[in-house]
Length: 547
Image (cartoon, rainbow, N blue to C red):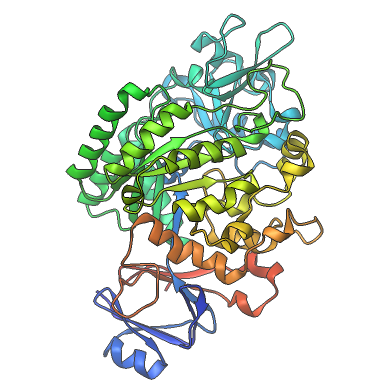
C-alpha cells in the first residue's frame, strides 16, 4: 500500500476550512493533518507526493441515495439521458435498435428521457412505432416513475383499453380509452413483468461500471437505495457479495431493502424478521440495515401525495387528485416501530407534503429508545408543510437531500409549478429552514435520475439555480445553504447517516477516503461552484482515480 503526501492544499472537514495545508496517508489511514513538514514526516520516506496546487482537499463524498447498479446497467442499454429534444430521443432509440438487432426477445430497453421534452410529459406509442415498428420498446423516464412503450410492447403485455389502472399507478389513454404509451408508477409493471429479466451478471457489470464512474467523481461510499426484487431487477445483494468476495468491490456500500407495496399490517412481523435475518447473516460488500419505504410518487405526474388537491385537474378521474400514497397510515405506524425496534432504519421516499407528514407520523410512533439507535431519514422532500419542519429535529430524522432538483429548470416550470400553485411552490426543498432548525443533513444524487457529480448538487444547494444558469430567478432563494454546510452534508453528514463512522472527516487515525478538487470553490463566487471538478480520489489509502 503506497504512502501518500498531499501538499499545498486547502483542507475542508466537518463543516469548516482547516488551518492546515497538507495531509499524510500511511497504511490506509490518515496519519497527519497540518503543515507540509508535519505531513511529510508522517508519510515516511518514499511516499507518493500529490501537489494539490491550491485545490480543495475534502473527505470522500458519500452518496446517501443512489441506484448505482441501475445506473450502470442502464448506461449499457438505450441511454436517453443526453437527449435534449423529443427528436433526439427517437433518433437514439432508432440507432440503438439498429445497432443491437439480437437483444433477448427483440426488446429495446433503456431509459433516461425527460418528461419536459414531451407535451404534458406523456410521450405516445405512435412516436416509438414510427422508429421501431416491429420490436417491443420499453424505456423508463429519467425519474424512474414512468415509462414509455410502443404498440408492440403493450400488445405483448396484453395492455389494452380493457386493462384497468392498478391501485398504485395510472395508464395514460387516448380519448377512446386505448393506452397511449405512457405508464405511470405501478402501471409500469404491467409491461415490466414481460420484459426479459436483468441477470445477475448484468448487475455485477453494472455495479463495476458504476463504481468506476462514482470513484472518478470522488464518491467513495454510497447507499444503494433499492435492494430486493424491483422493476425487473433481481435482488442486488448477491451481485455485491460476489464482487466483494472476488476483490473487485472497493467502495463502501450500504443498502436499503425494498418494502413491497402489497405488505399488510398482518405481515409486518414476518417481513421485519426476514430483514433482520438477512442483516445478521451478513456477507461482504453490502450492509443491509435499512428498509426502503416509497411513500408516494412524484409531483410532475400527479402521484406525489399532497394534503390539498393538485391545481390542474387530472383527466383520469378523482382518485389521483391528491396523489398516491402507496401505504396506509396504519401500515406505516406498524412497520416503522417494528423496524426500529429491530435496529433497522427507515429510508422514506417522500415527495409530497402529505407523504412527509405520514412518514414523520410513523416515526413519532417509535419508542424514543428505539428511535435513538437508528438513523431514520426522509429522501427528496420536494414539498414540506412548514409545520413539519421542526419535527425532523424533534424526531431525530435526517434530511436526505437531492439538492440538484431545487431549481427552476424546465420540468419544474412547465410541469410542476402549474400543479402546485404559488403557496406550495414556496414550500419546495426547504433545506435552509431545516438546517436553521437544527436538522441533520445528508445529500445524495438519485443517479441515474440525475448526475451523481456532487459538485453539481452542491452548486444548486448554494445557488438554487441550475448549474451555469445566472438569469433564472432562484427557486425559493431563502432556502439556499452556505457552501460549507452543503459540502459538510455530502461528506460527514452522509457518512454519518450511512453508519460509516470511520470516514467522512480529515482527522489523524481515520480511514483515508478523500479527494482533491481542481480548485478551491470557497475562493470564487458562488455562481462558479459547478465548475469544480474532482481531480484525485483516495479510497482506503489507495489512489483509485487520478495520479
